[in-house]
Image (cartoon, rainbow, N blue to C red):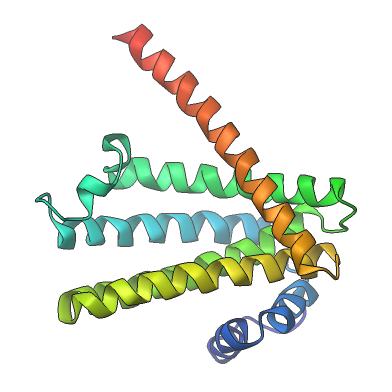
Length: 202
């Protein structure tokens, strides 16, 4: 399975992801982790992110300006949000693989899965840091959200470029945009079906 995913390795990879995302992506892909292990890791990250999300909701509170009013009512339940997040991640992985291949890319589903699973671990770390900052310095927490969102998107584009071997970040950005559009369409269809089932069962 290659180099072990121990703590020292994970910390070093975390730093490399922030400073040299292309090298980090190549390093992750070179691990060639088992597909079953990666799917399990992705689900675990989804569950942990859902738990952290519930904490963020509690900190934000139900009042005006809190975190809860910013989310659809259906996703304010930690369980519902966790299920939604995992479903959205699976759809994102499949769509990014498929769109990239249509554009001449070489990444398989397993490659995109490995990169997205790692990014979810980074997201978890950022969310934990956000909780601390929200309690101590709310303004700093907001700045962290903005910086993490922008740089996280940049990292994703570079990861997709490396996985598909485009050699062109603009092409990778196009694949990411098309992928996000495909995910939105898929999620809209899923919500439409769920809404019809709820109305029909009412």
